[in-house]
Length: 81
Image (cartoon, rainbow, N blue to C red; front, side, top):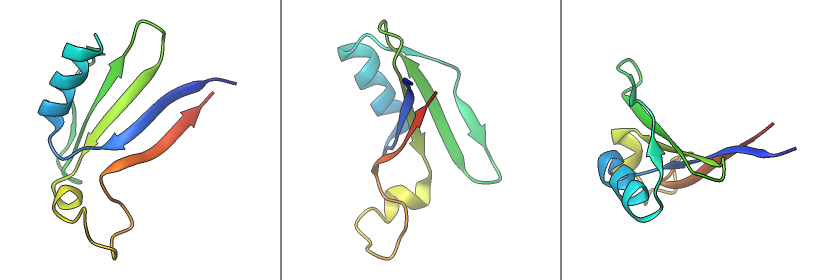
């Protein structure tokens, strides 16, 4: 078993991608966009083979401090294979 990727909700997708590519030498894949769900994401790859999925939805970024939302900014899931 290995960790395939870890996913996090981020407030600013482009800023987060720039951070990981600059400071952790990550390689960003193509941006994914689902207009129906207003969902965007990037998969970032690292030399070790690990991957990070940065995800963004405007409504999650706006409601990050709400206790009534089921999804908030930060760690959201871990995929294993």
